Image (cartoon, rainbow over all chains, first blue to last red; front, side, top):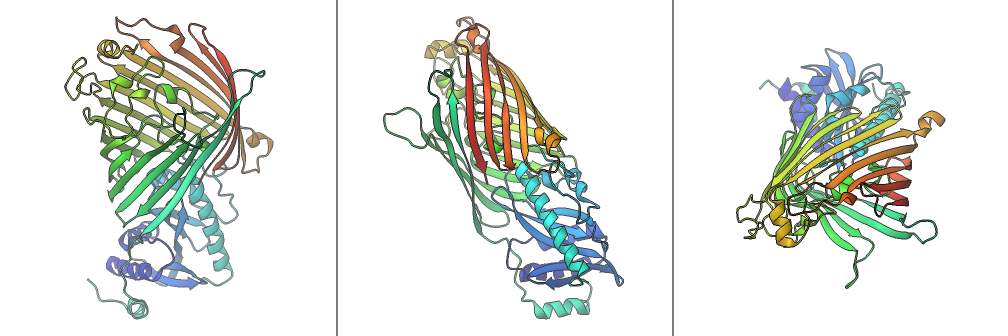
Length: 162
Length: 372
């Protein structure tokens, strides 16, 4: 199953040409960590975006998306994953390219996002704590997650994502 | 390998099987700061200066190899025969990333010492000028040529490290007032007589960063009056720092100690009054007034107070007479307004005192800064 997932994600990475991608193996591992082993991953298009639909034995587990956000001067490639009720399951930093500020990849920081819904402030200094000395990265990722969560929720509720 | 399921086959037929590769890309960023400073009182004119204009240029060659640089213009221009002004490469290195735990780095790098040296963009610190301790004790922006490794320790330990073998300091530049600052070679046609090691270990949690740094290396530059070994007249620097943000509060503190061996020979050889030990620290507290006045706002208005206490002649060799005016106490208070997290307007007032009570003054400063 792992082999299949890697293959699909490799193909997906090849088909998404707009921005920096993540190594497929890393993405597969990340999805496995968030949703469990052996889940089915389908690629769904919404407008110009590609969303991963995650399911197991016909039951929807949620949606995930690979996004890029500019840090200080490099894109940060991350996975945002939601459950069927549009709550954030997790985020995962897939590729971090800046020389500093990589602490946004730490679990202790990422876990603040779990369970957030689209109405949450998702703002550094309010419901998300800053990483001292990595202000740009923590603000950039937080803002991007807020937008991703709003969009995924909107697509799902409006039926464009099923 | 298992057989491909129908849904994978369908995808195989519809998607061209190109390799998923990191695209080559060139990125730019930068920061800048403009200062107004009056160190001589209200009856005399202040000074205005474009203190820094900095461009970051980076290029990603592949998933593993990237180039980073920082080019800086200080004081708007460099004019022949005039003091001040500098055009300088502050960073220029290649990274080879094996894993998050190990990235090899080679080129002109920043010794990972203290708070400001690696993170010196104006919106990241309070006060128009950098803390004086991080100019006169830890000589920011400190950079030199070397090789090393950086990374985060695996798992969720929150630990990260940087360690470099870099070119060393030259004792001939040391002074009583600013310690080792003048000894930096900054990668300019530099003598590679004294390789040095520097490194840092950091522990990070949301809101908290604690770090410890060191530098060790000789400074003799094969000057017979001081020593001809690569590690003769060594400088040993150790420092610890903490940054802690909680609610509307932000605290930071730093302590640094520098031991200069053979300070007597250095002082004699160059006619300077070089200390055998330099030490000091600062603490700073800030509170975001908007957290109390306008809780819904995402802007910040930080009121801050910083106290610095340092002595660039904490201990002197027998052939040097200690100057009590170098035992300095500096109190700085002011406001930092950040409409966005990467734009800042600053104002502060600084009280500069010393043990001898000589040449004490007060400084008013205003500034704007940005980074992107």
